[in-house]
Length: 128
Image 1 (cartoon, rainbow, N blue to C red):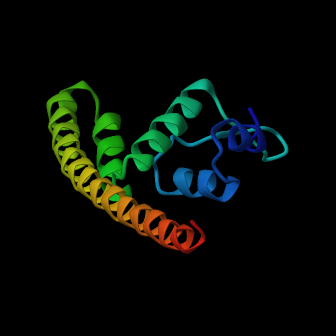
Image 2: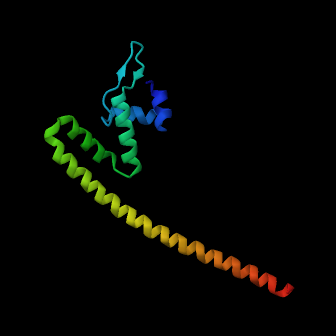
Image 3: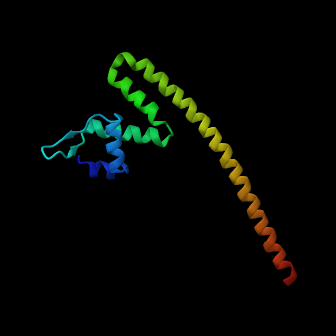
């Protein structure tokens, strides 16, 4: 699969895909005789995984560490699991913070709505 197709499929810019390859987040992408990248299914699965983890807020450095451990083989399985567990904990904390922020926004919006309704009522009273 060409880089433009991967870019479109995963909604990731071509520059980002090149960057991910350069820093080792996705395996080296094979190139055809013309030097054009040809992504394998495995590379596409890595792109999907990295995109998912980034959208959840995992730092690039953590993902590089994970990929490096993965490339070292099965003996790093426990270390990879621990890394993911720690990132899950961090994500839960961020989600709780986001929940609090959402509740505060809902409160503020409700206050504005109450003010608008009050202002509208005040406008109607003189006409009644």
